Image 1 (cartoon, rainbow, N blue to C red):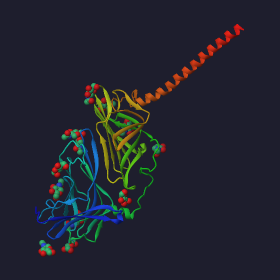
Image 2 (image 1 turned 90 degrees about the horizontal axis):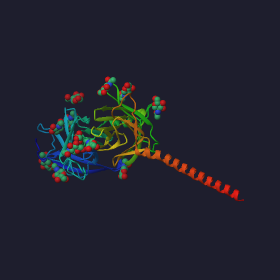
Image 3 (image 1 turned 60 degrees about the vertical axis):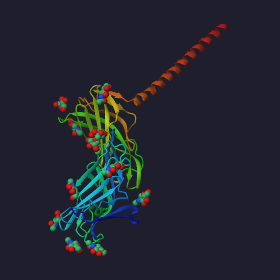
Image 4 (image 1 turned 90 degrees about the vertical axis):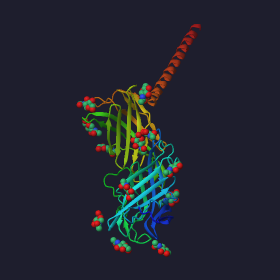
Length: 416
Ligand SMILES: *[C@@H]1O[C@H](CO)[C@@H](O)[C@H](O)[C@H]1NC(C)=O
Ligand SMILES: *[C@@H]1O[C@H](CO)[C@@H](O)[C@H](O)[C@H]1NC(C)=O
Ligand SMILES: *[C@@H]1O[C@H](CO)[C@@H](O)[C@H](O)[C@H]1NC(C)=O
Ligand SMILES: *[C@@H]1O[C@H](CO)[C@@H](O)[C@H](O)[C@H]1NC(C)=O
Ligand SMILES: *[C@@H]1O[C@H](CO)[C@@H](O)[C@H](O)[C@H]1NC(C)=O
Ligand SMILES: *[C@@H]1O[C@H](CO)[C@@H](O)[C@H](O)[C@H]1NC(C)=O
Ligand SMILES: *[C@@H]1O[C@H](CO)[C@@H](O)[C@H](O)[C@H]1NC(C)=O
Ligand SMILES: *[C@@H]1O[C@H](CO)[C@@H](O)[C@H](O)[C@H]1NC(C)=O
Ligand SMILES: *[C@@H]1O[C@H](CO)[C@@H](O)[C@H](O)[C@H]1NC(C)=O
Ligand SMILES: *[C@@H]1O[C@H](CO)[C@@H](O)[C@H](O)[C@H]1NC(C)=O
Ligand SMILES: *[C@@H]1O[C@H](CO)[C@@H](O)[C@H](O)[C@H]1NC(C)=O
Ligand SMILES: *[C@@H]1O[C@H](CO)[C@@H](O)[C@H](O)[C@H]1NC(C)=O
């Protein structure tokens, strides 16, 4: 590798026309000439494990990002053209380029993050530096032109997702400045030529601004390989989720109902583990895992994962907790809770359930077995009993009072 006298520069650019969204400028130089230059905003959504759960954090490429001159290269003398940006405590993003003489493209996108950086990854149960690579990122342009993409574009890189926006980029540059001729990405072309909403007959769930009402109850099943139903669920589901909304330009907390008509169910049934995966049109996937303790013959809901790829969010995001203990019941029974229940998954995501009945194990004849009801339902059943008992007591008191009164008045007549 020729790591000659490459040097790096960093400029912070402010785009007034984009409402002052901060962009970072990075360039790779060799001698007096610039070979790779980019202006971009990038956010990373990274999933990592703590000892008890899985978390997802959002990190933005900070304005203190610099180009690592030692690993970056202009690709002369047969080596790969390679931009490596470093930030924070041992984090890095790399873009490698290739060209065939008429086009150039990003050959791969590398993300490196240091799990010992507790300011970004609190409570991570690993402390190593993780490197993930995404081959074939769809970024390409004609040589001697600048690739331009204002629209956010997201690339999944293993356990992470990278979202670029307001991006201008050129590699194999003929001069030291970005070429004035631009290759516009498909997303920008689509957004300028097509009206933003060309919705046909189906309107996919765009998160509503007003709080939705009680969600509709859906019936979801999972089938065995031989086609018999092995997991049954009936419930209304409502997500209570915080995320960064593009349309509102801030982090919002929102209630989103699942619409049974737009939701497919799938999953798997094993001896001591059963999963139900609900996929709703518009990029919402909810994954439930039930675990059976074969010693105690009790089962419970042990994991919930939400994966959301919403057009209004800056990047796809997910929330997981793999050490939950909800909906406990006994093997051979179903679990029922008519009252609204809130299942907290992580601080930024909880799931509200309505009129719920599930049976993840030992389903026979495609029907729910006898239900064990949640405490809230039992408490609600107690209310009529208590009221009834109180009324009965009242009636008794009135009756006794009447009888006593009658006796007294009889006694009164006799003395007269
Ligand atoms: C988004 O919000 C930030 C801070 O609240 C503001 O500075 C910026 O101008 C807003 N951007 C857009 C595109 O509205
Ligand atoms: C770089 O520029 C300086 C002056 O601008 C010039 O003297 C020098 O020869 C150049 N070096 C190369 C490698 O072009
Ligand atoms: C978290 O742990 C699970 C279970 O061990 C593993 O499958 C997953 O790959 C881990 N995720 C990360 C980001 O390390
Ligand atoms: C980290 O936690 C995950 C589960 O959250 C577990 O599967 C994994 O083995 C743990 N890794 C280490 C190194 O402890
Ligand atoms: C990772 O982060 C820790 C803590 O911030 C730091 O001490 C360490 O040097 C970093 N590792 C690398 C490779 O930069
Ligand atoms: C990504 O590109 C870099 C630089 O060209 C290269 O060193 C690395 O092997 C590539 N990784 C993959 C998985 O292609
Ligand atoms: C470069 O690749 C593009 C797309 O694969 C192709 O259309 C073009 O002919 C290639 N150019 C050369 C010089 O090979
Ligand atoms: C790109 O620009 C350089 C310098 O202006 C020129 O030598 C080269 O032929 C151009 N390449 C193409 C494919 O137009
Ligand atoms: C399961 O099988 C039943 C028929 O036995 C079918 O109606 C249902 O659609 C199947 N469910 C799934 C999720 O494949
Ligand atoms: C279907 O398969 C399950 C196990 O996978 C088995 O318990 C059940 O008896 C099978 N049912 C039929 C009708 O074959
Ligand atoms: C769901 O579909 C059924 C039949 O396809 C229809 O009767 C019902 O109105 C639909 N519900 C909603 C909320 O779209
Ligand atoms: C299963 O239940 C038994 C008895 O309640 C308990 O001691 C054991 O820890 C449980 N096992 C697991 C894996 O939770």
